[in-house]
Length: 149
Image 1: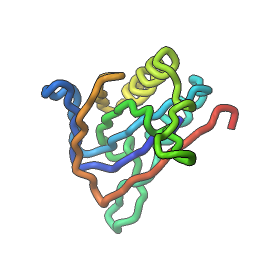
Image 2: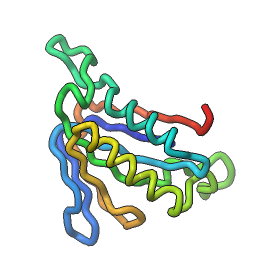
Image 3: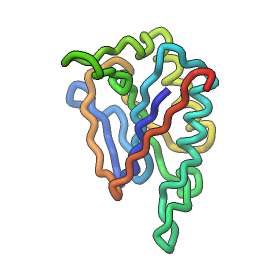
């Protein structure tokens, strides 16, 4: 599982011209599910996102997590995080999980953040989405956990 985590001042996702998810300060999490991912990888990545110390303290050091700051999360499914462009000119998405695997893990991921007390918004799984954000820093971190790893 891969999560591209961006610290934001605000973020929103629109589907068909309407806003379906919006947050204030916190994390925009673009979530890619691999074909071999299970609940174990999902829980590891969710915990890492909740506790990743990428928010500044009074001295300007990265010492606070999403949980500590009371920030919000916007989780957007993004199978293209598993695009492999090492051959040819068109990426292969064979490592990306099919919807039957990816959607339940995506929904469980968002619910895991909510259960930890984080106000969490989501996009619409499988929809064409327009994501807008104001990156803070900018701060962008890739969090990844391979099955069995």
